[in-house]
Length: 263
Image 1 (tube, rainbow, N blue to C red):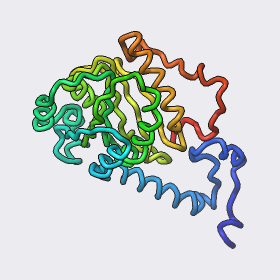
Image 2 (cartoon, rainbow, N blue to C red):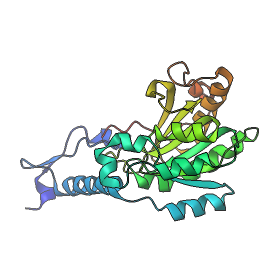
Image 3 (tube, rainbow, N blue to C red):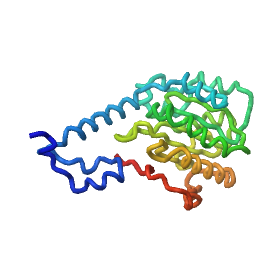
């Protein structure tokens, strides 16, 4: 008897078309069927790879230059991946060399500064950051945009110190999110008004799950533009700034691929 013959179908199977979460996988005896088990093992391996895979900095700079962006390169105080994972505090501040290099640059205050950080998924930074910048850039024609900063071994708060040193009114950190078992390449966006060392997460706004299978680039750019515009108007971000951008999309077509990823 083949496994297909012994497979017990799950009555929830019809619901699988609405989510990538692992539901209605069926049973083969007292275990999972072979195919879902192998898919789980693959997803787990991809998530581990996403955490440990190094960011291809040269390729990212080349992509940004090809789109007309000027760039800077920095490194956190975490010297390598092992320290980054074991010491989150080191990923929240610049290395001495990077801090000194930024401090020596001529003052060029900007309305908004974008930082691309590897975070917990260099895959996300490599795949999603440049297309997102392409989508948001035309919406910021009246804004002064600073050089795009590529940051290695970065945590979210690293953008605060970078923004402070470069005199940015708002810093936008594009960073690889913690991989899920169906999303090893999900990008997070963190917006902070008046960035400075010591800002708390309550002073930021976040847009999550940016990737073609989640919140696509155009929708993410719409939300980001709304939050940037309101941040500049209200001179704040965080708990005092609510994301009401969905109301502006009420008449727009809905992307059926957009869903929360709770796997």
